[in-house]
Amino acid sequence: MEKVRIGVIGLGGMGQEHMKSIKELPEAELTCVSDIDGEMTKKICGDYKVPGFTDYGKLLESNLVDAVLVATPHYSHPEIGIAAMEQGCHCLSEKPIAVSVKEADKFVETSEKNKVVFGVMYQQRALPEIRLAREIIKSGRLGEIRRTCMVQPNYRNQAYYDSAGWRATWKGEGGGVLINQSPHGIDLFLLLGGLPSKVVAKVRTRLHRIEVEDEATALLEYPNGAWGYYYTTTNEAPPAAFMEISGDKGKLVYHDGSLKFYSLKESIPEFTFSAKEMWESPEVIEEKLELPECETGHKEIIKNFCRSILDGEMLIAPGEEGLWTVEFMNAVILSGRKNKAVDIPVDREEYEGLLDNLKKSSQEKTVKETKRVTDPRFK
Ligand SMILES: NC(=O)c1ccc[n+]([C@@H]2O[C@H](COP(=O)([O-])OP(=O)(O)OC[C@H]3O[C@@H](n4cnc5c(N)ncnc54)[C@H](O)[C@@H]3O)[C@@H](O)[C@H]2O)c1
Image 1 (tube, rainbow, N blue to C red):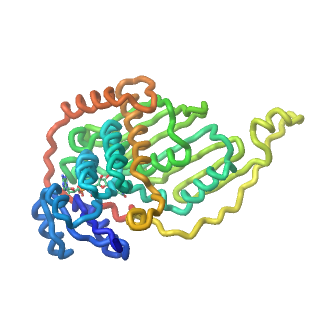
Image 2 (cartoon, rainbow, N blue to C red):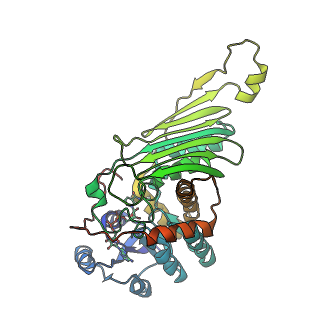
């Protein structure tokens, strides 16, 4: 195989961006598309001169694809991805891989059973600062992680929430800021800081006229006893993410795209008991960081996915790691809704039960005009 033949499923804001990337990549060929909206499918087929299907099942039967890129609303990611994998197709899923851990498990298990390449669109993993932060942690220069923090404010107005029937509903989207705006930040937080084992959270709808949460906060506990803090919202501007990962040999600070690494001459546990003077503290060095030169963005994740299929290149964002974010989001929602501490791995049946009840309470939403435009700032 010289090029991966890709079918894009879901031709909204994000699907259309991905089609542009595929057209620019020598490793990929856009061979067909699918959207349940017939008008949209027809228009895209005309623009890109490829066959289109309103039923993704027909796309899978067409023999036109080696892989699919799924850019539909959240609930359908595992349904479509699993159907594709069962036909032997590789799958790149938009984030999150699923709304619930139970569905995410099935998605991961199907990829393993069918031995297909499974990627998830966590393009922020490709940022040079994040690649470097991973290296620093892997090299042991941070030491054992003792504390984490992520404060991740986003902003969305009511017009955004009113732009599609599925948005910000339990039935259509399966959550609010946690499931839609925050997965990228949560993914980076878990990638660098690890997955907590216990969560005590609060969730609420503070400002918008929506049924899902637009604000969440959580205290975290990790398997090694480290503590952490997490906050997210869609009610705050500017939307600058702040993350700290503190180890016993140093501290990583990531703020709005810039990375700092403070290393300690002696580790905190050693220094604490060897220091003789009352006010002594460990010596701190702010290290000069050299960012790697690398490609970033959605296109890089698609290219890496194709190279993984063609040459076995290691995935930047493997689908099975997409399960971490779902664990975290589900734990925060479950803890906040039930007002209790929740363990990770999340109890699959308990979360499914909560989600079923929330879906039953979900109101039908009338939308004046559906808009399919992706955030121009979010590459
Ligand atoms: N990675 C990123 O940077 C990023 C940015 C924005 C959105 N997203 C994700 O992309 C996905 C889509 O978001 P969007 O903003 O493009 O939404 P959108 O509403 O603009 O588009 C979704 C499209 O999917 C179609 N669709 C729905 N069900 C379908 C089905 N069963 N088969 C085929 N098509 C179907 C809809 O008709 C619509 O055209 C979401 O998961 C979202 O979280 C990712």
